[in-house]
Image 1 (cartoon, helix red, strand yellow):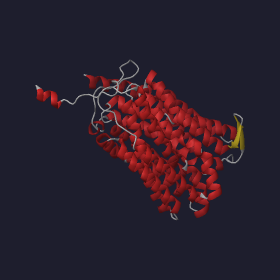
Image 2 (image 1 turned 30 degrees about the vertical axis):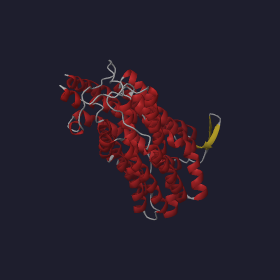
Image 3 (image 1 turned 60 degrees about the vertical axis):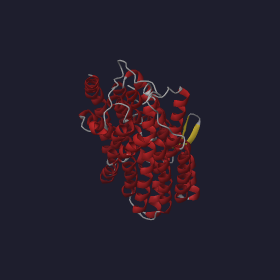
Image 4 (image 1 turned 180 degrees about the vertical axis):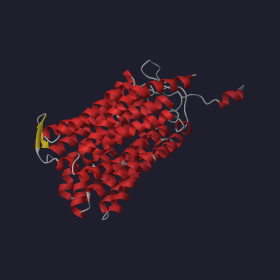
Length: 428
């Protein structure tokens, strides 16, 4: 009897909500520090093009490589986190982020920029996957909100530096900007890493059970998850929604230039900025706000119902931007709507994945699904080639709008009833 008592590890005492929220805030702060690696890139592209005279599609392969390495290695990084805890992975991630942009600062060839973006992509992915996975584990009772707030750090984190980055590129050149922003952000990530912890069994509340939220009490191992057809439905939906938003993220300034609205001053909410700067600032704020907002909504009305609303709104937003975006005011407003209806994929999909497959391997399983963002990034250069060959953005916008409407319908008609069966079967 005593042997049995000794082998069963005692559950740790439940921690205070203050302690859980502190862990969440540390993760959000780290996410803010990696935001520019993705969202700041668009401001460097015109200056890189001007200095080296490379075509835009070739330069944008650096962005695609960044997103691929940021996403496709997250399951491996997630395995390390699930096994060894979050601290080491974020520490290494911060170092790689700094090195990546330092390489960009010295690059004089396309391959140099490709290498810099690959290294910073690996670093950013390590931080991203760890912080989202940690949030999912600490907050089984508020999973959508916690994942959304964490992802918001990434989505909105770069809003504070839109103007400073553009000013520094203008005054000191893009190479100095890469170097100083890269080093500064990387060092802060390394410091934050030392404060991150994973929850022990018993420290957090049990998963929620209600009619709107279907949460599995069974923990699926990553190898099992890959054999579940429902995982691949979620993956497909993530890819087709993700591609549209990434296309606008990477090409916001080039689209503004092509539509001749980029440098036109726009006054809204008592502020005046050029259309592209205004759009980029608003986009990042809304892209951040949408993640906890729709995450919180999904905690209350269910994940699939929320997907139906958000993806439908995104499809309409992309179509409206295509129809009205040649006017600078509409360019600012509608690009904001596009980002508001897009960013929530980074709270809805991880929380849906963990609801379906359990929390024990949450970092790895959510990481497997997050690789869909990398797959979506492969479509960004294709969008550039379509635009270059046709001379307009028409086809790109029409396809992106249609893909979002398709995902919206799949969420309500296929994913919702199918997931109910999977969770019920796991319970049985």
